[in-house]
Length: 167
Image (tube, rainbow, N blue to C red):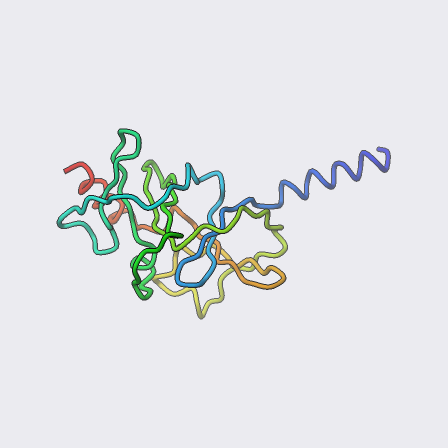
């Protein structure tokens, strides 16, 4: 194989090892989810409250005729709750077989993160309630928490949200 072909092959493998993510801010910390799981990012809009839903479920929205449950990630992660701002957004993601919205304080960028810059969560951090942490990306000037979007909600919580959105 020629040197150029080898370099091209190595570059292609590097791109495959990289992960493209959407980075967002929650309580002044950076989190990210794989871009393939993100349907869209929308401005905060009127949310209809659903009585009896889990406390971290803000309610539902009508997104082009589809009713979508909306979760507040500050509440889900047991962080201090604050008023939403002009920068607040709803990140619409695919979670298992369900489309949901995640309220975040702001969306900052789309990044390509090399696999060699991601560490697994520390055992001290990875407690029972942090099952949704997939890793920590170490970038030049900051850390980004990579979320396993499928584990942000337990199966039971997913069923509760689906039931409350239907009723």
